[in-house]
Image (cartoon, rainbow, N blue to C red):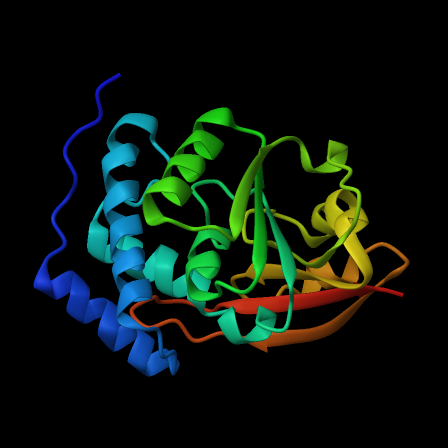
Length: 218
């Protein structure tokens, strides 16, 4: 299947990204900023054929996908290895891999067309710190665990920890990106897990509440 032409990176899109990074206090060098914009181009191009995300406009992709993914940057920067479960089009893992070249990322999803896109994006962006996995999270059994297990795709915290907690190493943490403060979901967490923090996140140009729930095994 022939893919459409790339979208154009407009000066407005570049300005929106620069302004968003400034308000979030993130100092990414020019090379990584260009990689972010190229990723938006790739996502817009592939999305027309493979329907990777319901967000169509590049400006909205920048806020809802790029800046939203980067909102957890400082909270996972201490990790050396991270797996993004249910990565979809590479969110947040691919964006965080661009921002954190010293962290090794594994991007896992069950849907082959999504991991195909992510694999292509990794190659075109020249990333050497990210790999893709086409597998069900509960079936994936790596030889060693990860410092961080992150997702913004799971609808329920209980399902997230029951399906993915085995991927943590002894000191690992689960990072769940959520909208409003998930009081009810926290109350339904199974025994053996504790919420360490619920961190409010600020995402420029994105309305509504955002939180990062940090969970560890007890």
